[in-house]
Image 1 (cartoon, one colour):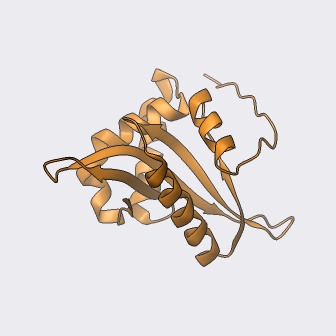
Image 2 (spheres, rainbow, N blue to C red):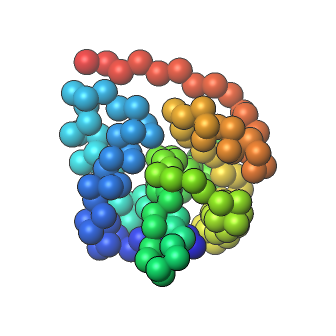
Length: 148
């Protein structure tokens, strides 16, 4: 199952979400505090969203399989709104059923927010392979350098 946390629920899972953000985004240690504080502010204000993918184990307990953060951004130049999927972080094996459900819900959310495109950001090669297998195409490669 995939659920979108409400802003007031983010604090309940913040340690796990923060770990996923830092790991998935590859933020240098000296910038992590500021980066995660800004992300927390966006999640708690509703400017960004946090999604939790989970399945029930044999005992009926919820086991979190992945966390994804999203943000709807507008493009004034081209007039195209985009749903950006970032912080793609998996904690354990993700079934095809859960992947299909997640992609469908993200598309539904994108349509509801009048987005014409979904993009995904990840520093993980396995996440990139996952995205390519599920209808995403490599659009361009970005390079970055943190300024200290």
